[in-house]
Length: 78
Image (cartoon, rainbow, N blue to C red; front, side, top):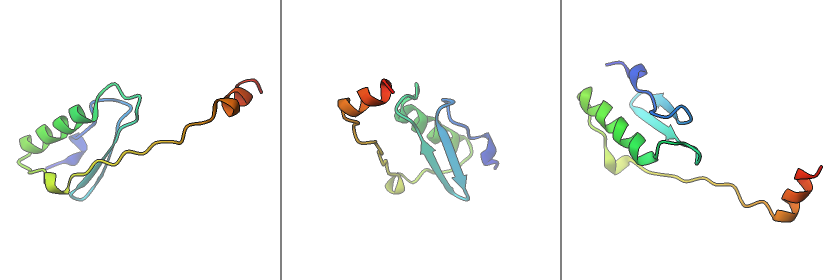
């Protein structure tokens, strides 16, 4: 089995693969939803006779704090 043929569906998404772990990074502006990317990964695993352990699968959402409008206006006009 070769993990190099597992690639994300969207060019903005990124897969980090190490041994038997895979991490999907998907920015907010990705055109492919996380659900579609996960379905793609699950299909790849099935085709390669692997089982995805959904009990160990988690979603973590990171976001930046909102920038105040006053600060944003200052930056844009500088």
